[in-house]
Amino acid sequence: MKKQEQHQDWVPLRSRHIPTLWPIIGYWAWSVRDYLGVGKGIVLSVWDHGDFTTIWQQHAVDAMGRTMIARCLKGIGELDHIRQTAMVSGEKVVRSARVFADRVEMASLDEFHSFFSECTALWADFTRDNMLYWLFASDVLTQEIEKQLQRFDVESRQDIMHTMSLSSVESYSLKEEQEFARLVADVRSTGIGSKSARDGIQIFSEKYIWLPYEYVGPKIWDVDAVRARIIEALEKEYSVNDEDNVLELQRACIAGHGLSTEIINLFQILRMFTIMQDDRKIYMTRFCYYFDHSILAELARRLDIPLVHARYIDPDLLKQHIARKTNLADCVRTRAEFVMTINSDAEGRVYYDGEEGREKLRALGVVLHEPERTEEVRGQVAYPGKVRGSVRIFKTSSDKVEFHEGDILITGMTTPDFVTIIKKAGAIITDEGGILCHAAIVSREMKKPCIIGTKIATKIFKDGDRVEVDAERGIVKKIS
Image (cartoon, rainbow, N blue to C red):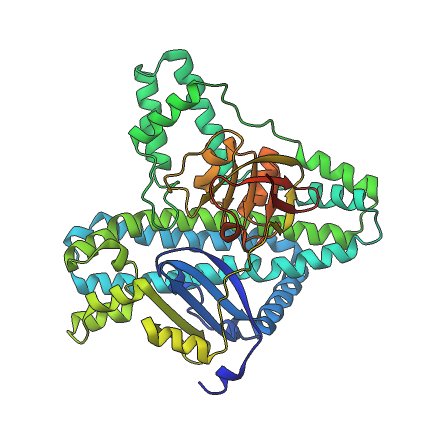
């Protein structure tokens, strides 16, 4: 590892609360170099009391991003095929977890191990087919688009960026909201106790029970939760924003600004990345519902350990436990406090638990600093607007946080399960994300002021802070 320890161009790529190794341990478990011709370098993943940070080498991120953009431009007519390939991989991941969850109570520990290994391989395929595109190429793509738009004035640039980044494919969040709105309208006319309402609630729950689960739940849309959500919606006018005719808006934008084929192609890639990121969140949430809610819960019961510890079991650790070569309970208890991994094309993924992990991180020259105290943060505007309100911090959408109409939602990154919260929010602020992220997609669909990629908003502000959100300039600041 001595050569590796000399690298200093570390950059945090993602950082949020994800208190589980799964499905992250499968994300880069394959040879990027064999697939792309450029290596992934050294990838560090850190879990500190459930707060996850993935740290990459900047030169590898840049090289992978440029390679993916070049690949997409060369195959500009095949973008839909790229997405369809990724969706097939995503369905395989979900199907594997669903099938094993159905028989999990009868499975032996050896079968658990085989399933874990299978999941790691399937997630590797899905990462290659989906995440590899938007995760690395989005920043390079945005920079190239901004360079191409320099000849336009500020107002024109904003109009082009907003209009041309809209996708004509609805996000999964919006589809679910539209279906729920129709269910609310039916219940409003027939009554909450009617057979039609009961049947509608049952069907909706069966279809979407997993949607609010994200990585570790525990929230689900079971019948009781859907019924409670409908009762809340009946107390006010419930609707979904009218849809814009996206294709018509974009045709007018292209003609009005005289956009070149080069710019049009770049935006076509950007929109495809946006859809693929939404796809990934849906497959990930469906997988985690079966995996965490059923499979890990049963394994935790079988091993007589807490579920919060079972989330840190990897295939090798389970294999060692089966062979009676390790004290699994002690290991996962330590990992739940702190664990880091080093993943490289040459050596695969290596785990370092507890203090050994902290020492390895220091040896690699990585220091995860707490941000300095400040009264304001800056980020990228996803949807414009200005608003004031009280801050509510969410690590996940399942957090027990009292959220009122007009409150300011601050979180690491939104996922489809946040939509019921977002509908109430005065504005959305995230630590992570670029123009392709879920918060950006949903804010444009719901026309909510949104600032993304602040990096530190969840650490700077606290519940109850009064803030001004200036989503014209990308600034959030405390006010008296």
